[in-house]
Image: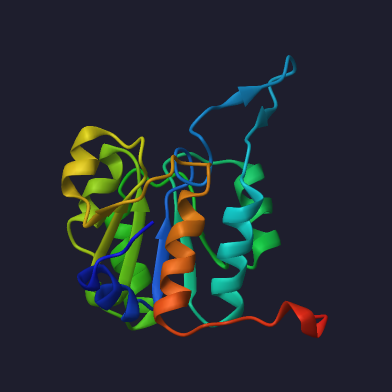
Length: 176
């Protein structure tokens, strides 16, 4: 993915990255077993990107309209402490999170895919849409990544932020 200088400049200021879950960190499919248990498929490359952001001091949050034990467990495994589920009014959660972290819109990136994400996307500095997002989200986005939700889209955003902020990680040192 080739980033414009404008996108790089915005990404350089980011202190908080917020992801939607279904359709962004997953492909948007919901799987149910015969006994009613829900399953989701997450991309391990997205997960490493999220984990690296957290390890290097970039705040990461998820704000999702659905509630799932799977999401709570996945985010815990990645070190994400800001997990907000069952939030149909995402903007209220967004405003409260910014206040708690003492940051403003210019320091926030949001990655979304559907119309429930629009209120935050129209306020934050870097509004990212996944390639298969709803047409209104594609129109509102600052940038559209060339990957679909659950297929490495989140990793592209993580890599962009780490690259422009000079964040590197030495995997040869034997620790993460």
